[in-house]
Length: 123
Length: 169
Image 1 (cartoon, rainbow over the protein chains, first blue to last red):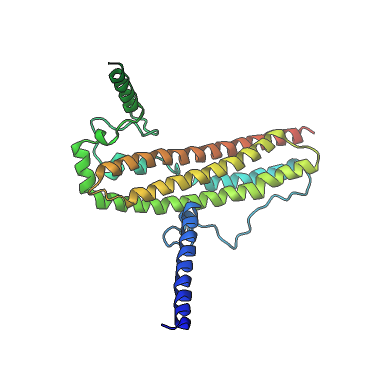
Image 2 (image 1 turned 45 degrees about the horizontal axis):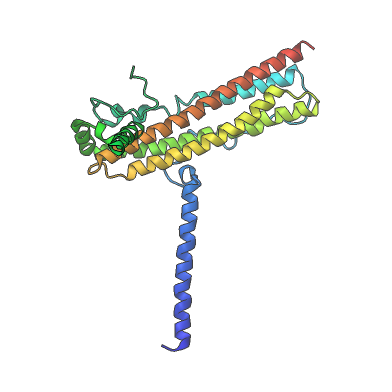
C-alpha cells in the first residue's frame, strides 16, 4: 500500500470514528436531557389531533400595558379560568393506579414491599 | 467476642436500612409476573405513550399560563407602582415548581424505560424492584402536578382579592 492509499484509509477510518463518537454524544445528551420523552417527532408520543389546541385559534394574552381596573381584572379572570378548565380535563394526572399490582395483573402478596409511597390501603 | 457483637449489630442495622424487596415477592407473584410478562410490557408501553402526551399537554398549558397571564399581570402591576407581593411570590414558586415537574418527569420516564427493558419473564424479582422504584418516582410527578394546580388556585384567589380592592376604589 503506497502512502497516498494509506492516508486515504486513515482519513476514512478517522471520519467513521468521529461520526460514531459525535452521534453517541448527541444521543446521550438527547436521552439524559429528557427531550426523548417529550419529543414531538416520535409517533404515538404526540397528543392526538383532537387533544391539541386549534392552531388557528388566537390565544388570549393579557397585555403588559393597560389600565388596572375592575373590567380588566374581570377579563383576566375569565380567561384564566378557561385555562384552568383545560387542566381540569385531565383526570388525576400521574395517579398511581396504572402501575398498581391490580392493573398489571400481579396478585397481592402476603407481604408487599413498603417502597410504595402512594399506597393507601395499608393501615 | 466484641467484633462478633459489632458485626451482628451492623448486619441487623444494614438489613433494616436496606430491606430486601426481592424476598417480599411470593411464588404466586413471581409466577404471575413471568407468565403475564408480555401483557405487562404492553401495558407499560401504552402507559409510556399516554404519560408523554399528558406531559406535553400539561407543559404547554403551564407555559401559556405563565407567559400569557401570570407574568404580564405582575408586570402591569409593577408599571402602575402597585406590585402585589403575593402574586410575585406565586410567580416565583410557579417557575420553581415547573422546573421540579420537568425534572421529576425525566427521572420517572427513565425509570419506566428501564422497567420496560427488563426481561420480566426471567427476572421477575428485578422487575418488581424497579417497578417499586418507578411507582415512587411517579408519585413525585403527581405531587408536583398537584402542587402546581394548588398554586394556580391560589393565584386565582389573589386576583379575586385584587378585584375586591379595585372595586372598592
